[in-house]
Each structure stands twice: as structure tokens, then as C-alpha cells.
Length: 153
Image (cartoon, rainbow, N blue to C red; front, side, top):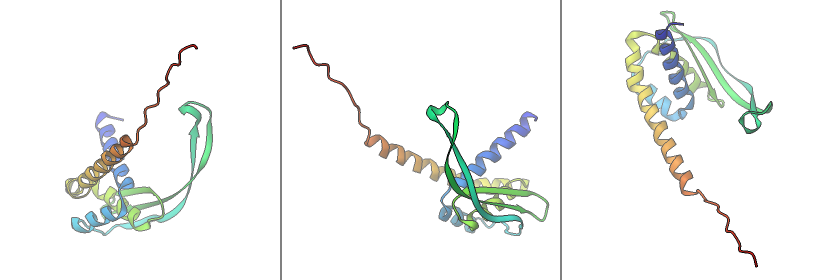
């Protein structure tokens, strides 16, 4: 893989993660306001299923099955041929369909900048703000434990 392809892959991975993590109401609002075309053909789904969650004790122990999570996925194809994919936790079929269309549109040079400007950038900012709020709320509940050394009687 060439460095350029690696950068493209990393940017696409980051965009898909933003679309998956974004609240559905925010994504749908930005999508409706974007004015981007919605003429994609569904190739797969949207469909809902389960994935197995795996964990490791202490982050390095032997892997074990932790549980299951509901995931929805979709694959679409634009009339020009680009294929978009999307996965997201939960059962929101419309959110995942739109996320797959956005993934496909982002691959077209004439739409990439609009997708970034009108959808991904506002979602990235909203997710960062939500993360900052959550970190502040968590820090406010931090408790420092300490041990008093008792003298010998």
C-alpha cells in the first residue's frame, strides 16, 4: 500500500468512525441540510444483527467472550460506481443507510469537500465537545484515596 493510499484509508476510517458514533438526530439534520444527492442503490441492508464482544483480563490476558451487541450495517452504490459502507451500534436503519451514502459520496472528488464541510466537521466538533463535557463530569467525581500511617502504640 502506498503512503497516499494509507492516508486515504486512514481518513476514510476516521470519517466512518465519526458517522458511526454520531447521534442519529445530528447526522440526519446535517444530511437534510447538506443538499447532497440521495440517489444511491442499496446493495446490502440496512440490516441488523449481533456481534460478539471480546475482552482480555487486564488488557493482556487470554481473550474471552464478553457478550453481544446489536449492530446495523448497510452497503450502497452510487450511479457513478462508488460503493459506500456503514456500521453502527444499535438498530437505526435510516442512520446507517445515510452514513453509507455519505461514505460513498466522500469518495467522489466533487462531493468530498462538501461532505467534510457540511457533515463531518460539525459532527467531529460536536463529538469532541461531548467528550470534553463527559471528561469534566467524570473529573468532578474523582476521589483521591490515601492511607494514614498509624503510629505504634
